[in-house]
Image 1 (cartoon, rainbow, N blue to C red):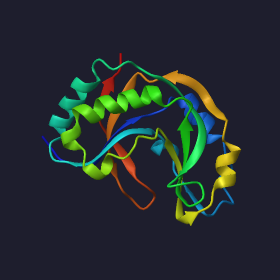
Image 2: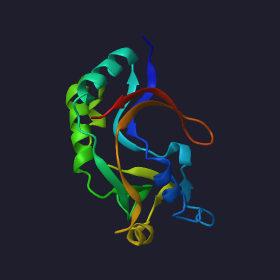
Image 3: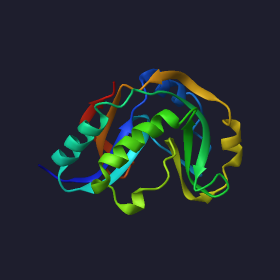
Length: 182
């Protein structure tokens, strides 16, 4: 048993999708955006934060996910948190979020004791592409990707429990466990 400081469950897109995301933008000349790195790109299923007993969380997730159907997803569209008019996060979305919502629901129901109330926000499947130093308007960037599919659809056959370690160049992630979806 060991503790985790910043744990989360995620879907990591396949290399072909990461390549397509990588080719979306020229990341130079957009100083308001602090781009995330390719090794940070994922779709968060659930954030847990600090977890005292990683073995207990892994066991709970294994039980919750052992009968969850593997969803097919495609990265499509974009948005900003909290909104495209005052964004601090620029993200890519998912064409049909319902299959990932089913994965999220199974996790949230089974692992509720590991989720802080403030982390029970409505689930919005997304991949964080950039952060903004100050809340900024990114409506043009979001509109440019409104109906753009990024890469091919793929079947999510695994979700991974990761631990985030903040650093000067952005967070690095350490894999704790993987869970196969049926």
